[in-house]
Length: 163
Image 1: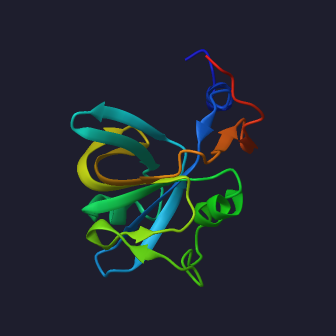
Image 2: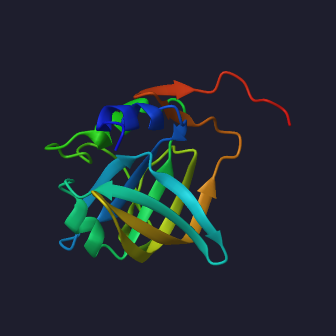
């Protein structure tokens, strides 16, 4: 390789992504979740999405065992929620209200959109595991402005360009 990990990471940081929180329940029924910006659409028929999780994540085994999960696409004012679910060694659901979704997954209030998914497949992705989900239920506020991630920090849209 003619580049190091920092150069690779900095180059990827130039790509603007949205920010999501992915939630599920573990085998004991306890809710858990993570912040992820590695989220993408895959297929319209069937409706599939993907996201990836580091093999070093303490939530990896629980997500690998989960039959359902929910992707919450965050609004521009939800950076605190993103930071909360990016932390480890804390109860991310302490004091938080949520509703049960498909398969009992925790549905967080206020996101721009949410995609309730059935786990479709899991694939090796180097130091990550790639999760594919079949979307089985959607809720979306099409007027919501998304929270963005760029260059290692949060960002918001300043304007929308007409095509």
